[in-house]
Image (tube, rainbow, N blue to C red; front, side, top):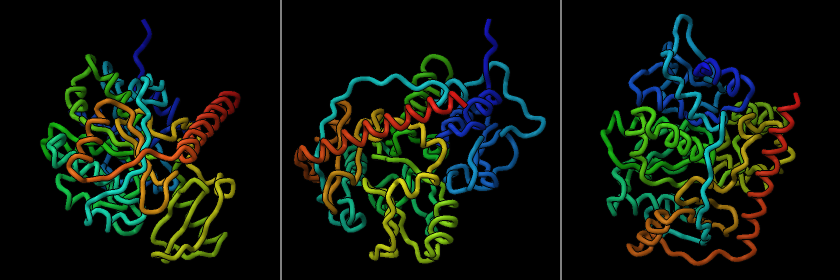
Length: 372
């Protein structure tokens, strides 16, 4: 009988080789199993087992220069556990089911939300607000900007909280830790999970492995709605801001208010003023190691995906993947949270091309690492 693997195997096979997504799924399951061995160690920018966490377990891990989950001295996982290993999407990817793939150009019809999200049109927040108003979910796991470009995972239970949290960068947060927060801290039984494609895949694997094998499934299945974000990858904040922007390009970090990854590369802003545009080839060295093997641009494990690529400023691209996602979308239309029209063919072709390019790049990087 094969010996059951545990956190030490996850560390050796995924974390130490740079494949970790920093999604927070391992931390979440450990908390939901009432073990509490895993935390986020921000002195090294990583989830850890045991010890005292440096910051809240809901804070973003990938802003630190290093990122990986460690086991503290003298601490051992239960011999019959190991769920952190078997549910990790970078150990074995979850199975992808065929989806609808309906594509729309969407803008919010809610004035408050539109003002808070001028660039993207507010479709993302409006879909979440509609789900709350329609009692589809009791709360939404979101990411807020703490004011210094540092993300913080939060649970929003009304439109005002969604607006307050607007602007957080989901690519830089251990978003799945919000599942445990929503259940254990807020006693919620139906929540919306918003996040990047890797976070959506991590939740899918968490759900699949948990089903029938451990009681964390009873909690993780409380996620009723999944809204993904189009993502071309996250970058090491410390390296990108300090080494590249400040030292190489001479832009003081204090002046920067927003770093935005679009289809043509990195855009750096000070308020409304664009300070810099750099193509992907120029910043390739600063992409997080875990992002380099990702094959998903559109968030294929989501009910709905949202992004700013393929649509003009003030509008959002929305992709519906599931029948339930379509119900949520149509409800938002019915209650005048959003207005939508089919995405133009040229934009749909762009989304398809970017998905194929990311998939090819991820597969190539995986093969390269196997040969090392």
